[in-house]
Amino acid sequence: MSYATLGRTGLSVSSLGYGTWGVSSAMWLGTDQDEAARSLHQAIGAGVNFIDTALSYGDGSCERLVGEVVRSAGAEVYIASKVPPIEWPEAPGMRAPEAFTADWIVECTERSLRNLGVEAIDLQQLHVWSDDWLTEGDWIEGVDRLRKDGKIRFFGISTLPHEPNNALALVRSGLVDTVQVIYNVWDQSPEDELFPAAQEAGVGIIVRVPFDEGGLTGKVTADTAFPADDWRNDYFAGHRKAQVHERAQALVGDLGIAMEALPEIALRFCLSHSAVSTVIPGMRTRAHVRSNVKAAESGRLRDSDLAILRSHRWVRNFYEDE
Image (tube, rainbow, N blue to C red; front, side, top):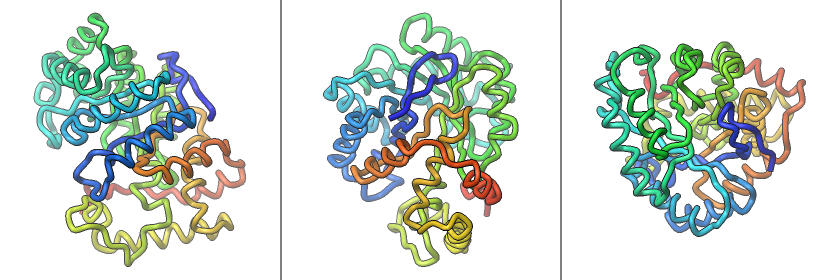
């Protein structure tokens, strides 16, 4: 496993991190909690030392599982969590006092500390962000209070889906240590402005959704059926599954690889950018861990492959688009 410094935090984090949204979320149906725990243990045993979770994942149950696994593993693991906005999901045009107040940030962090069973969270993040909030409200007072009391070590934010430039002012302000952002073969937009700004400011980059919620695994086809209440029925609604499969076929055709090799290429694409410290795919099974560890250990892609992948840029927002 390779490691990189997470911006100015100085933390040496594994290039492959562990995203836990699917571990305890009712939105991802069919998750086996025992298998999730075994997967977390396996990842830590393979050298993964960065786990990303959130208070809203399973209403705290995900944090409790992470805390139990990390304590029993006996290894040094950095835990990142997130504070949800007061109103969830956030509403367009919401102002900072409606999303995050100082007291709310402190209250949620203290709940996360209890769930995790730790005295301090290595990286606490706001689960959503808008640069309009930079000079609004008292949210930064909550962050400062938590730092002063030793309840968090570092502070970051998670950007809204496909809005990387909506954190540029925050990155340049010096108030943030890390930014978590969607970045993958199709949505390469963080490369345009966010990554250069983060590198200049010493802000660490955490990449989420490297597989486009499954679209870049090659396993989503026009005939794919998700469980009735699974949120992916909305994400891949209508003709989207067919669109995604058609573009995945074009990708592997241009690369001259089998469809089964696409997940490895998709993960290594993210890890090939110098601004990226760690990538946090969801890994609900030990098979996911094995394949992603192997991909991460394979290192940076060749420049010729990166050039092909960059020609497949496709920015769209399946989270919101009709």
